[in-house]
Image (cartoon, rainbow, N blue to C red; front, side, top):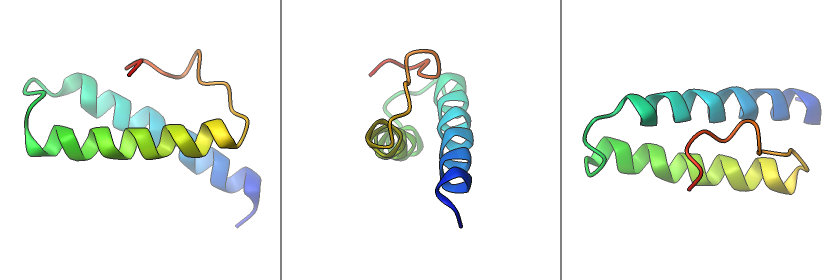
Length: 61
């Protein structure tokens, strides 16, 4: 897998995780906490890769 492919997949997953987080009503549920952990992991990966998350980040945590 090339770096571009990895970044594409990471951006898509970051967007998807945020969508699920925003749809979740119970912000204290185990499922939400798992999504939040993945959100932070993806945020680190994308930031280190030089992706500007200003426009992509809807959660802003």
